[in-house]
Length: 129
Image (cartoon, rainbow, N blue to C red; front, side, top):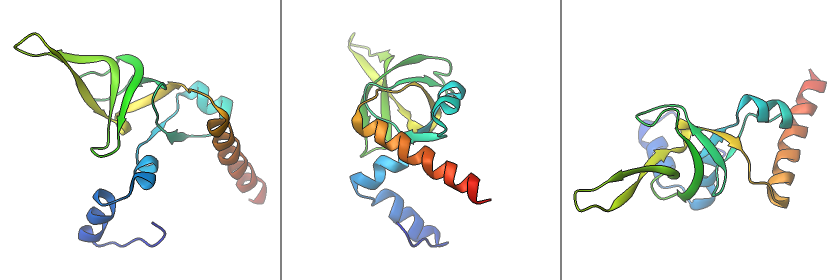
């Protein structure tokens, strides 16, 4: 998505017609203040097993682990955020990735490399100015 357009039609098509690899980036969430200070990064793509806090909407203030990330609908499912149906079944409630803040990152080698790469970019920008 290097070339962008001011056309609403084209922007809408680019967003909702995006491949999974681009949707991953679109489903980024900001880091908590502590993590932001620790890693020097503002936001990262959200993934399963990250711990998050919901900061907007009906379920504001709830915390939990990401059970599932649904890239098709741009939603994540947080552990403990569910509703009981009339027949007694519990269904998870989808939450937009932009409405959560990551409080604990599930680290692996790829995540470590991503954080290192993003923070060094930021460091270089500061030195150039």
